[in-house]
Length: 387
Ligand SMILES: Cc1cc2nc3c(=O)[nH]c(=O)nc-3n(C[C@H](O)[C@H](O)[C@H](O)COP(=O)(O)OP(=O)(O)OC[C@H]3O[C@@H](n4cnc5c(N)ncnc54)[C@H](O)[C@@H]3O)c2cc1C
Image (cartoon, rainbow, N blue to C red):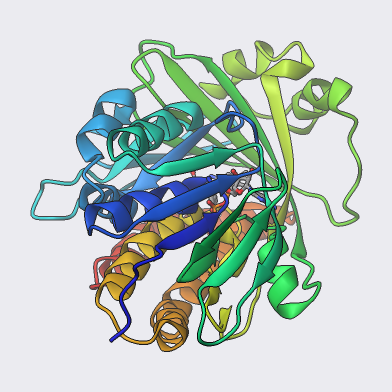
């Protein structure tokens, strides 16, 4: 049995890294969080967290904070509309934990981070902002030694890379494994929430899909997907004109929101990438979690939830003792199938939302009517399984 006397160092203070630091601290394991940004500044858009991610936040002891900072879907309803605003169908996402955990919470990313980093401050976790790891030495028989970019060094029993889709820790372990470009672009904007929008809405067009989701009592978030097979470079100064043009055919409740997009600071554009890392997700006492190991397309809204689940599971496994090398290998084996399942379903949902053939979109919408709820139920039955 190995004790974690020197603690766990975590490189990357995004969703996965902050959650892991909290989960470890709650189990009495010392954590040091190393984040290259000088302050907590996630992009200003929103995120929605489904019940399985909320279950993980509950394990971290921060669910109440998330509920009060975000918008809690009262019934899990997801309204599908056509591009001209006609209803297609409504599906219902389930809550979990015997009704304790709601089906979906929409929240501003800065608010999610505020809640997570408040817990970090309360737990007195050692945070190093504005630095990265420049040297990592993992020699059997002694602690893992890390030199930071500010010249400081630290010793730990485990180093975890939670440094996102372009992870430098992954590159150190396995060489340059480039993320896979998926051919999709996502356009995001935030708006004052009109009083009459109190539900998650998905608008299914031809070649495009646009979502609307409240992220607080007075704000909402819009996210649209387009096919971008050639990975074009769109200059930031004209993101708003591109978003306006790409969703020009959309009517219904999104029209007035699209009309509000008049300057580049309204819009965030992201070229969507995935990470396909074969097992093991670790080498020696250095391992990977979150997007660094298994980034997925965002079409099921599950990337953040997978990162949160990783953190809860890894903290439990590390705190359980055993040889760290074996624990990290076992962690990857425990998480791989579930993360791959999410990647596969999410990519398929993205493909269905971006069909360019009109007849195919008619068939898709008919299938949504007849099969949409069964698909949701099957997916969330899997998500409700023990992690
Ligand atoms: C368009 C889009 C929409 C999405 N919507 C949702 C959604 O609605 N719901 C959902 O659950 N998920 C969603 N996701 C996925 C979700 O954002 C990610 O899965 C999640 O952020 C992964 O968390 P992470 O901590 O692994 O990585 P990140 O959030 O990327 O965090 C990585 C952190 O590491 C830091 N870092 C990077 N390199 C270094 C380094 N060398 N040294 C130190 N620090 C470093 C970064 O600054 C950052 O703070 C979406 C993704 C996209 C692209």
